[in-house]
Each structure stands twice: as C-alpha cells, then as structure tokens.
Amino acid sequence: MTEPELRNHIATLQRWLDSAWRRLNDPALTRYDRRELRNQMKQADAALRKCLGLVSEVKPAQTRGRVGNGDGDQFAKPDLRFLA
Image (cartoon, rainbow, N blue to C red; front, side, top):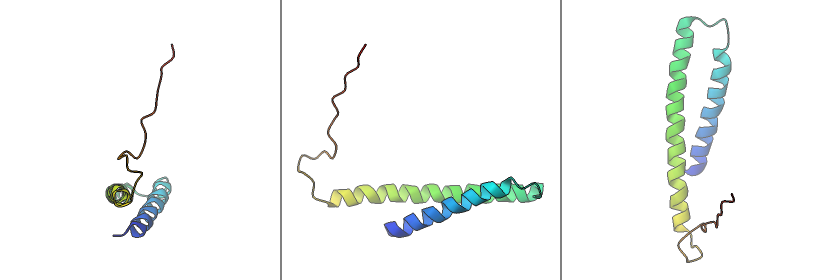
C-alpha cells in the first residue's frame, strides 16, 4: 500500500470506530449485538494499529532516501538545564 492509501484506510477505520462507539450507546441493542459490535471494534482497532505501524515504517524510509544536511542527525540535541 502507498502512503495515501494507508492514510485513507486509517481515516476510514477511525470514522467507523467513532460511529461504532456512538452505536454502542444505543439502548435498543441486545446483549448479543453489543458483544458482536465490540468484537468488530477489536478487529478494526487491530487493523488500525497495523496501518499506523505501516505508516510509521514508511515515514523513516522516506526520510532516509532524502539528502540531509550531512551531519547525520535530523534533530540537534537540546541544551537542557534544570533550575532549582
């Protein structure tokens, strides 16, 4: 999958989970329907985590392919001091 496809899939899963949470609040759902909905939500959550992991793997690969400033570090170490 390309990054735009992953982003689209992530957005779709997020929208579905949002609507599922809202539907879970419906008092008309039976115990069985609630259980099934929660099981589907767990599957969607696992798929969302997988897609997010793939996006995080794609990002570093893209930044490695780019030419940097030559020092090897993308971010400089901040100079932190703790005041007492």
